[in-house]
Length: 638
Image (cartoon, rainbow, N blue to C red; front, side, top):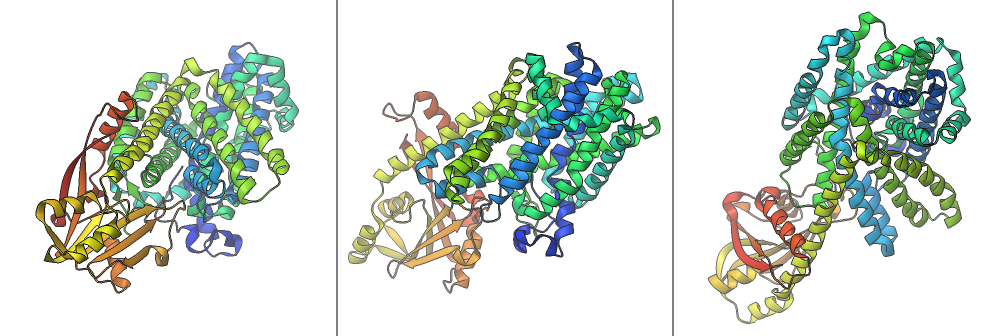
């Protein structure tokens, strides 16, 4: 899941469906080339090389292996990327937005009975994405820097140090925002795809028999006749499709038609030319198998290509990193993980965010992957598992959306979804064969994150149930206070609460211990809806309960970050004046402890308490002025 740079206007602002008639169409098309296709665009650095090397090591002739591998690559891109993502999923938008959680939320709104299943699929898919986010920067940068060995063999020792320097700079740069460099993403990647296409085109004539690979029979026969080897190669072939999910994830940033046009008329032709050029090269010269991508270019272009490849892989890695930030923010809003610190790095683009904890955890994980695997070839074994698993999950969730939201007959949905599912499951099975060669790494990352998310969801439900037992009905409390009013102090008190119809714990403790109430009391509840964004006019609901009590419900989409000062500013525009300088914000700080009567196993109980302790402070997360906050501590046994 990539994230659009600030220099690109969101497609939603002018209507994603306007397409070619919009004056912004070409700007969005170029922008999508830089952000959406960075990952899949760097696959030629390693995809064909790894697949052809695996086949050659098992005794197949280069010519025989090349035709089978190329046929599998071409038809994998056609079926999975073009048909599934471009022609099908780009139409399954959630109010203009795409991505794993957008698809999950859309499915849950139309298939209520299957909501728990869709929620579980969404958590699993997001977990696999993080495995992808760790391996993509490592394999992309390593594969680019490995071109140093072609310049001089002694440079092999410099590959890992140079890769680490590049990645360290990339992750360090995140905190400063990507506004300034993002404007170059589109032009740089446009040059990259042009060079890809020209490099391949220059060598296709080396052996025109390579064009036979356009026939799908060559790919099917290759898998059929070579058994276990065919499945192994099939798993490596899928490296050519990594990053395809970014087409759907960035739907809201660029729009369906700019993404479709960029892929069909520019990106896919460039990739096909490059792959077929690599195939013709190795069919004509078997020694080129060592590194067919760089061998496409003359010696005097090796250094420029090494530099351009490094830039391209940095851009691809940047898209994955910012995608991890975006996905984590959505997970926080949907209540799947604890609150993390979110910093906005652009005043003009709400989507430009930086999450320090996520950034440095990713960086450490990427370094571990590089030191553990050391080469792009070793990392290739681990790469496909997370990508294919996420794609299978996408297809399963798309089934519910197409059936329930689009109102297609079940037989018609099955006619489209089942063949796609079978193809992706075949690729997933092929990648699972590499489980003990490194495929266990993304599986381990996904399992760990899935356990964390399921624990947080279950723990918050248990905590809400326990808390509710100690809360009084708000209407009952208001009637009691109006009948027998306590001592009132001047000013306004804002009580943040998850349930706007129950008296929050902080209010009850304030009454119990201080025996006072403010002249005006506001119960503020911030809700996340199953939609990416909420229109400004639908943001707030203000309800006057009595002369002294007001209920405000603020609604946010799962792709938005709530801000209490902005909520109060919005309330002022609705003629509900609040002077933040004379307002006190009451928050409940819960101290969690274990109990023998917990609904959760002891290990899960302890994990939830640890996660709750690591959560970002509500004052910082909701941007509440720190000098106006009163925290009321309570102990809760979960």
